Length: 374
Image 1 (cartoon, one colour):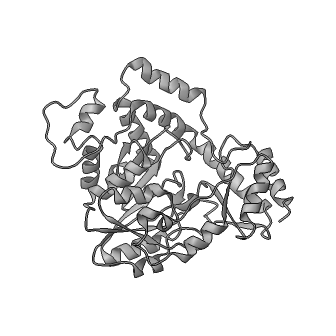
Image 2 (cartoon, one colour):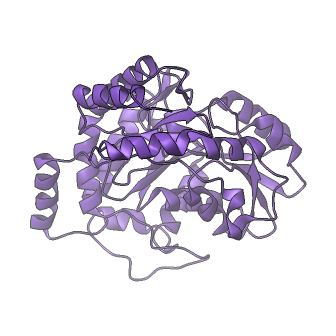
Image 3 (cartoon, one colour):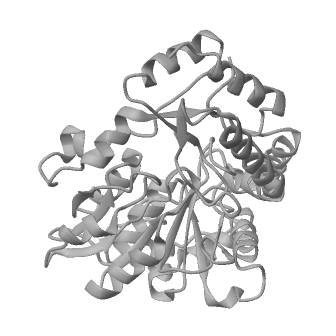
């Protein structure tokens, strides 16, 4: 079976983990500090590193929740999020006590439709969370224009787009607050992990404390291999920090990112050029600047499940990214309907996209699609 997604790790990651185990300090410490420094240097390309700060956490979901909490989002507030996203985006937002307002998406990109989002803004709206869908980021300039018009914080869910560039800079180098995921299937992995990056130093300081149970100034203690014993806590915090083990894996993966990115872009181009438009059209991303994750094909709704069954019979795993969140029981009742998201839900089919594949595998998948009797 050609897997839909798969972790791409090897001997280097094993050696990194063994190094941490041999050091006998598995929690948050020097490896996390180094990973943060290396991430920031990569994203900022070393030139303007002092303008932004980064904090590593245990998951991308934690990154989103902490970013919202650090912006003061909570009970009584509303957050605009595109319905076409993984449940983590909505769960992170509702965990703050705020109300999630599902927004519709653009049919070609799957990203938030800012015209629709504007119709859902109320006096309670405090933040907007654009989701970088399938590696693309849609019309981010429109998101920031909307946020400026209504004085909203922007928390970008960039779980799908680490390593992508926007307006000539890496995603995370600009913008309000950007959150990444480094779970086992992302563009780079820590096993589990996430990060928040921003130029708002007050927000970042708060996130650094919140990830360590809101123990004030505990980050520097941990980075030096110590613990805080006489401390104060002034708000609800969480045990969301990253471990040295996860950071060691991430540091190794970061070195492999250029290779991973080039392979993903190559596979996207092969799919894009090889799949006849009569069968399906891909969700649109900037093919030159975005690192695709995953590859999402739009297929006629009457034929999508038939194609998925055909591929499965030939040893090719597929998926559906994602069921719109406004259709989930927990989030019903806070939307005015998202018809485009529902249309996409019936059409989309995700094809294998990871760096354990080879060009022959992609050719085989394309050939199998072309031979489908639809």
